[in-house]
Image (tube, rainbow, N blue to C red; front, side):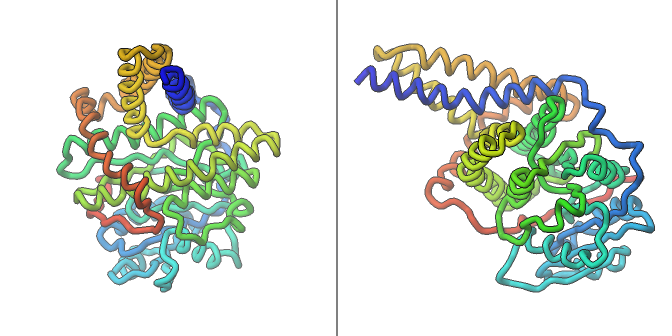
Length: 401
């Protein structure tokens, strides 16, 4: 029986070593100098269509358009897809100066369907580059120009740095949540960028050359449609690149129910995609002899960091208990090394990227944040969320000029 326990714990420790090692390597690589070839300032300005899918976004779309309109030239188009709206989203967008198309289909709900509708609208006179921006974000000055030029230069999708601000009245969990979002959307893709590897798509302000996006399978209700789109495009030979200089800001929901709903959708979708797509990516990386697909599979194999830490703690405690009862200490030693890698990566990411905005005391909220998410992961085992549900918005304010 002791030998069986030793083998099981050792196998678990080795399996856990894969995502932890990849996370550590990506985080450490983020400290390396940036790669100059990701910049495209000298490239000619391509013709751009900016698509903004919007479902009942009246409270915030005005602020979003206020940051987008100055970045659109006379040759570009800014199109808001008012998708199944029952509020003043369409009227506000028209008043701001955007072209508005309205879509009504109560059976097919989700961002993917709205974006596909927008692509069909512009396909008669296609642009060089399509930029997709969410209706609840603030797009920093120069972003559209940066990502459009880079997409044209590389002939690949481009992902911006997409970060989250804390809500107006933040709680302890909000600071940790913002840090986790930063690690996922800035630190790790920065490391991949430094290593010359592709990234996933994380949401807003993504740029696509028209030939790449024109026939992409967007029309679906996938709850993490951006992540799935990145995988589909990578399999087709168009793996995304990361543009760390281009920044877009969203805001974590103030309302507790909205925050929990947003997390359920993100993390259940992430886990479902991990379980279904990693094997396919590994298979195709061998079949197509492509290391970029292998790298994407490894990156996707990292579960949400809070879940990764939770798994490590659970197995570390189990390994120590087994050792005390007479089993081998080898699994505990391997897991201890993994814990050191995790701690180093998280603290290092905070030191380099978040120390100015998140005080050290915020890290003390990590244990409570992880415990808060235990029911979320248990729900995934019992009844995972599979349908797209929109997160309730807080009002968005444009930055002062």
